[in-house]
View 1 (cartoon, helix red, strand yellow):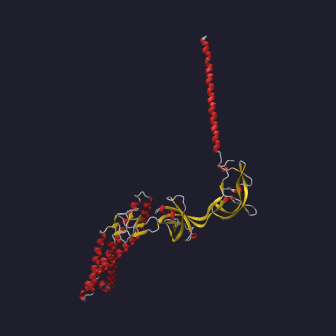
View 2 (tube, rainbow, N blue to C red):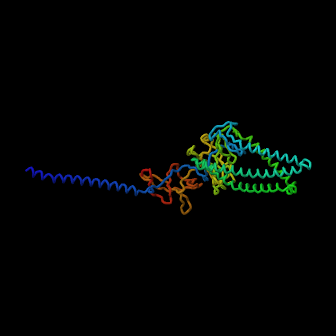
View 3 (cartoon, rainbow, N blue to C red):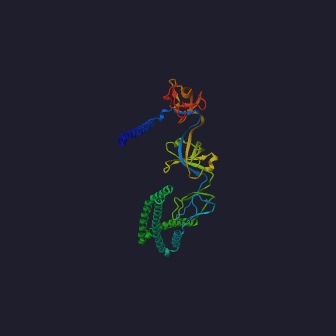
Length: 458
C-alpha cells in the first residue's frame, strides 16, 4: 500500500517544478523584451524633433577679427651687451625682483685679456714702423722690412681671427643644439632651436672669410720675400700700414670697451620678465634680459595677412586670458606693425588696456585671445539670424511661440531689421516684448504650427 502511494506522488512533484521553471523563463523573456523595446525606442529617438527658441532680448552686436597673442609689460626694458665672451655667472632668473645696479651677470675675461695683449703688441710694432719712416734714408730699409713683417702678421692675425670666429660660432651652434634636444620645456626648446639655426646659418659665410684671409696671408708672405716688389710698392705698403693701424686701434678700443662691460647691472628697479643669459653660453643676438614692472600691461597680438588691412589705429578691442576667465577686457589698437613676423605668421598689433579694473589680474607672457572690432554697436534688441524671413513683398517677419492652453503655437509677427551681425539681427521695430520666445529656423515653419519646445511643458 505504501509503495503505491509513493509511486503516485512523484509525477505530481515533477509537474510543479516544471510549471515554476516555465513561469520563471516567461518572466525573464518578458523582461528582456521590455528592456530591448525601451532600448530600441531610446536609440531611435531624434533630438532634432524639438523646435529651438531663443528669448528676445538685448545682445551685443559687432563685427570683429580674431587674433591671438600675449600680455606683456608696457614699460619693459631690454638689457643688451656688445661683449662677445662666454657668460661666466648669472645671478638672476625669470621672476626675480631686482634693484637698479644689481649685478645681473658676468662674462669671462681670460680670452679677452689675451686678445688685448696681442693687439697692443701689434699697435706698438706699427708705431715703430711709422717712426722709422720718418727717420733718415739709412733707416728706410728697416722701415720696409718692418712694414712687410707687419703686413704678414696682419694677414696672419686676420686668418686667426676668422678661424677663431668660426670656432666661437660653431661652439655656440653646438651648445644651443645640445640644449635644444636636452630640455623638456617646449618654450625653451623653441628658443634654443632658433638660436642654433641662427648660428648654423653663419658658418658658411665665415668659411668664405677664412678662405679669403688665407689667400691674403699667402700674398703677404710672397711679397715679403721679394725686396724689389717691396721697394716698388713702398708707398702702397705705407698706405696699407696706415690703414691697418687705424683698424687695429679701433679694434683695440672695442676690446677695451668689452673689458669695461664684463659686469652687467640692472638699469632699473623691476622684475626679470625674460632671461636669455645662460652660464657657459654666449649672449644671443646681444640680448641678455628684459626687465619690467608689474601692474601696467599691454597686449601684443598677431593678425594674418588677409585681415591686417582692415585694422586701423584707434579701433576698439577686447581680450580674454586664462587668468581673467570669461570676462571681456576692454582695449584699443594703438600700434600696427608694417613688418610680417614669420614666426608668428602675422603682423604685430599692439593693444592698450583701457579696462583698469582687471590690470592687477594680468601677468607678463600669459596668452590672450582678442577681438578687434570693425563694427561695435553695443547691446541692442536682437533675434537669431535664422528667425527672420521675408515674404513676397519683401516684408520681414518672425515667429513668436505663444502659449495656447497647454500648447505653444507659432504666431507670425512683423518686424523691421537693423544691423546684421554674424549670428544676431537687430530688430528696430516690432510688437515683441523682452523675454518673448522667438522660433529659429523660421523657413521650416508656418503661422499656426504647434511647436514642441524642449524643457517647456506642452
